[in-house]
Every structure is written in structure tokens, then in C-alpha cells.
Amino acid sequence: MKKYKKHSLLLLVIVMFILPLLLDIYWLDVLTLVLFYVVLTQGLNIVVGYTGLLDLGYAAFFAVGAYTTAILMTTFHWSFWLTLPVAALFAAVAGIIVGTPTLRLRSDYLAIVTLGFGEIVRILAINLDITGSSSGIYGIPRPTIGSYVLSSQQDFYYLILIVAIISVLVVYRLGHSRIGRAWVYIREDEDAAEAMGINRIRLKLLSYATGAVIGSLAGSIFAVKMSAIAPLSFSFLQSVMILLAVVLGGLGSIPGVVIGAALVIVLPEVLRGAEDWRYLIFGVALVIMMIFRPQGILPKKYETEDRSDLDEKEETNDKDHSMSV
Amino acid sequence: MDVFLQIFFDGLVMGAFYSLIALGYTMVYGIIKLLNFAHGDFYMLGAFIGYALLSFITGDGGLNAGLLGIGAVFIITMIIVGLAGIGVERIAYRPLLTAPRLSILITAIGVSLSLEYASMIGWGASYKVYPIKLSKNGLEIIGAQISFAQIGLIVLSALLMLGLRLFIEKTIYGKAMRAIALDQSACSLMGINVYRIISLTFFIGAFLAAGAGIMSGVYYGTINFMMGFIIGLKAFTAAVLGGIGNITGAMIGGLVLGLVESYGTYYLGGSWKDVLAFGILILFLVFKPTGILGAKEMERM
Image 1 (cartoon, each protein chain N blue to C red):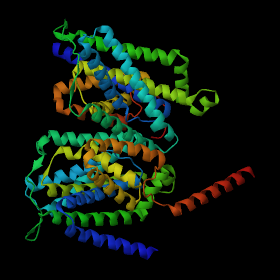
Image 2: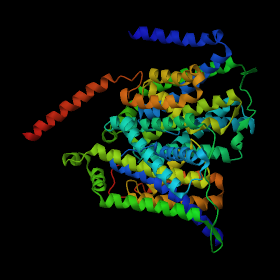
Image 3: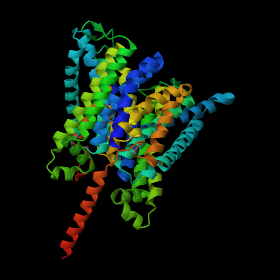
């Protein structure tokens, strides 16, 4: 079974690499956008899916990445590859800045604070001179590898495809690591997690920072792919769409989230005629989803967790017995 | 001094709108601990339904809507939006009252998107100009121009808030609301129809927000389907400022925020207005999450 799964995944990756040869430029562009969303949703998946912290301002980190790369490349003439670690560092700091005040807050306050933060970043981008005010930054140079300049649609498709595969692998590995289990524990029961010796504050901040770094990576590539960025790309609606992809797919589930990303991007393209209706459809879909299938299309299975749940119950029963004796 | 006073009155009007919306937030939060993201959209809905009704009575037959007509539109709009509030609660929130926090929050975002884009489809995405305009006539107090319209809006808001206070404190329904905020299961054991009271809370919240919406339409002159989003956040800020769950707090929070924003706009420039409001929100949530008038005891946040 497991071997079979591995083979099909490998097949999928190969298909993804061959696809640009078969698709026309329009669908290639759509697919590229899907891959951007795969990266973004993986980042948000860490924060919302694993750690259970609702983030409504995730586009802010996307913006931090995009603007850092854009400014460093246009004003300071850096190489694209050198801007990546700087953007990641800025995003991580931004993640910690958002994370710190929200540590004590409950989920609904958290949502508002992250939303406010996202709006502040967007308003800063509109008002500051260095970010080019509301018209944004344009004329961002193309990245180069040696003497080869990445410029065609295909080049960027492959670039984001590789980043998407890396981010899926990283998020998968993180989810199955000690850190990932600690995140899930915090999501399920913060107090119990703390009692078990999990450093709640450090892990929550780590979750924010990791999510932010992945988001900024997508942003950096977005900047060079579009060669022009404007505050409009980093609106609240962008954050909502990323969140929607995560929720539709299934919180915490990697294949689910990938499917969610594909749905959120491809559906509007299929529904082209119904342009005006798509956000209404998304809004209604969110409500229906939460009422009838809150776990998402392809939810994560927690087999081991169910068992531990049982153990816990037995333990408490024992305790009750000893109490009554 | 005259500028100072002028800004004070402008801020007071803005603050009155914030207060009216914040009341709905705070009441719903107080009673079922739900942060109703879609609340700002009731304000938008009020503005649009008021716009539709006013266009109807002023446009059709050419009769110039008298004060009576406008008053009727006002009340009808508020009732329609109040009923919409009940509908939203019934369809979207009630099935999820016992669900995890995250689910109901996401539902609220879904409701907000639905209301906004349904309005966009219904009325179009462009700005709409309100069919009636308030006259600029007014008084001059120590050099500051205060129009009768501003005074009227402030008085009207004050009356609505006073009415709400009396309702909460003197009627049996208000008593039931306060009781449910304290202990929901005990209330159902005592024979209070909890669901009906929750519906009533949504009705009142949406009713007040719609009032603010139609007033702002008349006052500012233009409306747009996204107008509820930012003001909803600001009203939430106001509710937090005053202490969420606290009715008087929401009123004070709204006024304070309106004034702070008004002076901030004057001294820092309009583009930083929103940053100021969100900055205040974040500072309050970090250092004093219970707000100005919040309850002393605090659950783990």
C-alpha cells in the first residue's frame, strides 16, 4: 500500500514536470498560480492546520517576501538568489512580531490581530515611498543562473514547481517531527501540552516564523515572475483565499491542502463567465463546508491520536476508581 | 480652538457610528462568545436597503420625501436588516454553536463574503450616490461649523443607544440576555428559550448597525459594497477598547475611537488613519484585553 502510494506520488511529480510541454500558455499560467498557492497554503497550513492559530493576515508575509526582493533588486541591484535569505529573515522577524502579542490571546482575538496586522502591512506598502506607494514597484529584473536568464513562462513554472515540492516535503517532515507533534499537541490542548514540558511560547513563535518564511519564499518568486508588484496583490481577500484553500482541502492535511489550492485557483478559471459570482460562491461554500464537512475534502487521519485518546479515558477511569476507594 | 472643536464634532459623528456597530459586536459576543465577522456587513446592508427604498420614494412619482417618509424608510430598513440578522444566525451560526471556535469563525468570514458579494451582484460594484443629501446649514459655535445634520445624527444615535440601555435593563428580554451571558445552560433549565433570545440579540445588533449604515449614507453621500469591512474592524476595535461584552463600554469605546481617529487624521494625515485604529487595537489586546470598562476577572486568553 505504502509502496503504491510512493509510486503514484512519483508519477505525479513526473507528470508535473512534463505538463508544460503539453499545455498552452494560458493553462500554464493557471498551473503556475496553483503552485504559488500550494507553497502559500503549505506555509499557512503550519500555522492554522498544525498549530491551530487562525491567521487572517497571511498575505502580509507574502508581501514581505515580494517587497524585500523587489526593493533589493531594483534599488540595490542585488542578485535574486541573495535576496531570498534576506526576505526569509525579514519574514521570520515579521512572524515573530505578529506572534508575540498574540501569544496570550484566544483564537477569535488572534484572528482580528492578524487581520489588523495584515492591513497595517498593506497600508504601509501604500503609504511608504520605498515601496512605491499605491502603484507599487515595477521593472524588477529577471533572475539569472550563471549566464542563463529565467524569463519564459516555463522557467518560472519549473522554479515554483521545485519550490512547491521542497515546501511540501519540508512541511511533511516537520509535521512528523518532534516539533510537528508538539504543534498538534498545542492545538489540541495547550495547557496539557505545557504540562508535558512543551515550551508553548517558543513553539508558537516557531510556527509563525516557519509559516512566514514559506510565505515570503512564494512572495520573492512572485515578484520576479510578475516583474511588477502592487499593494493590491496583498489584500485581505488574498489572505482569505489562502485560508479558504487550506480549510476546503482539510486543515493539517498536506494532500488535502494541495487539492484546496488547486480548487481555489482552477474553479474561478472554469467559472470564467460567472466572474462576479465567484466570491459569493466561495462565501457560501465556506459556510456549507463548515456546517456539513468541517474537516475538509481530504481530512488528515489521526490514527495514533484516537488510540491515545482511548488510553487517556482509561486512565481517568482508573483515577476515578482510586478516588472512590 | 475652532479647529479643535470642529474636529471634535466630526469625530463625535464618526464615533457615534462606531458605537452603534460596536454594540452589536459586543452583544453577540457577550451572549454566545461569537465574534461575528459579518457584523460590519449589516451596516453596509442597511446603507444599501435604505438607498433602494429612498430612491424608490424620491424617484417614483417625483414626490419629495418629507421627514415622515425618511423616518419610515429608516425604520423599515432597520427592521429588514434586523430580520436578515436573524436569518444569518439561523442558517449559518446556529448549527455551529457547539462546534470548535475555528469552524464558527471561518463560517463568519464566509457569511461576510456572501453578504458583500451578493450586494455587489445586486447593486453593482461602483459607488452609489445617496438620493437625499443633508443641508449644510448649521450653527457656529466658537468658530466651528456644526451642521444641524451632525447634531441630528448624534442625537439620533444617542436615542438609539438610550433605547437599547432601557431595553437591556428594564425589560424581561433584556434580563434574559444578561442571564444567558452569565450561564446559558442554567437559563435553559429555568425555562428561558435560549435560541429565541440569541435570535433577538442578532436582530438588535443588525438593527442598530443598519441604522448606522443609513445614517452614514445620508451623511457621507456615497456607499459601496465593501464599506462594511473596514468599519466592522474599527467597530470591533471600539468594542475591545470599551471592554468586549460590556454595553456601556462599546458606546464609550466607539466615541473614543472616533475622536482619536478624527484628531489623528488631522495631525498625522488621512492615510495613517487605519494604522492608528489597528495599532490601538493591538496595543489594547496586548496590554489590557479587558478594555476600559471590562470585567475584572479574566479567563485564560
